[in-house]
Length: 452
Ligand code: ATP
Image (cartoon, helix red, strand yellow):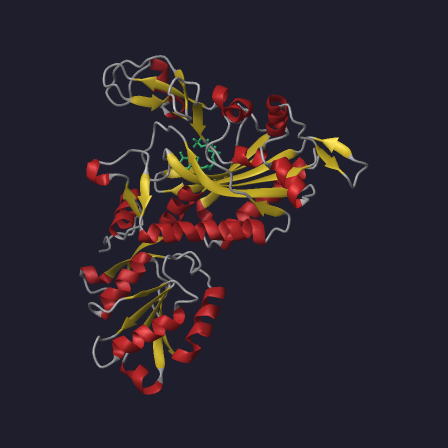
């Protein structure tokens, strides 16, 4: 049921996500596990599609980028070399009275200066550094000798494989390696739904360039990443760049920009584009003792440690962004009752969990059989749904809430002349199309989709 109010709030998004099976709280029957969420039937479809969209953009549309799937568990020296053991920390303060824990860098400055708890006014401890990496143990004994970390980012798996990929796939600089996978961070502040979680997924691409070419490719990748969101059909006025100031730059970064999105709780980071210089490979060279220089065979075998331009996006964060971006409580009539409103998710048809819903107007008179047959013909090419229960208007609303861009309705006229109705989610307009031309009709609508 839609809220009779157009304002977007995170509560509305959370409630729809749960109601329609996008996202559930982890271990909910035990009271929930903070920092972890489960993706339901519509959520996993959406997540897979975002991943596919990103993967195609990176690998299929860029001739010089290849993929990788590295393990989550890596040699602990990786994290020494990367600087994560020493530097991957958040500054934390605890309240001595109410025992709540806060990130000092996210607290109001006056409260921090006065060491005053923002919740209860109690006294705060000094700021301490808290490492965000999850530690666990590998092997049969738990005496610390098998210390191993759950990776806090996917990037390092790419760096330690860069030489393998140069050799096995004969990659020539400049080239990139793309990877999607889980990452884990012991985040203290995990409010705002799936925005910041302890277990999440990243979509990262590391682009290896010759030193001196880094500024040029940094600009190039910023342009590319901006264009990606245009293709996704996101409301561009809700996106902006934020350049990291000197105090914000990570220990490895020469220059860094975030793409920020205006979430209901304000402007927040969506993706980072970073010039990581030669920091990572130099460090791994030092710690592993292996030569990680690139040999430029086209340039008198010149040797150098490549610079790296990184584009680092959160997959699960992008899913939240798309839910917020697509969400609309829309007034569709003026009769003074609840039926006047609908909740609709305006997903790009290539991202929508269901592309086509097939609905027989009635179950009887052979309409259901005909509808199942039409669905059967669409299945190979599209994610379909079938719904025969309830009034047709209600069924459209259910599909609107799931973000299904097209509903195909089978009625008595279908039996007579073989035409079906195609109803558009965004405009709610209906056109009649011959069922034999349905595939081609949908294909061209999807190809020419533009959000109004
Ligand atoms: P923050 O400063 O907000 O903790 P960060 O700048 O450390 O984040 P990066 O290390 O640059 O984040 O991570 C790259 C991307 O991974 C982010 O832009 C975000 O989309 C995603 N990401 C990072 N941490 C989380 C998390 N805890 N939960 C969900 N997504 C995350």
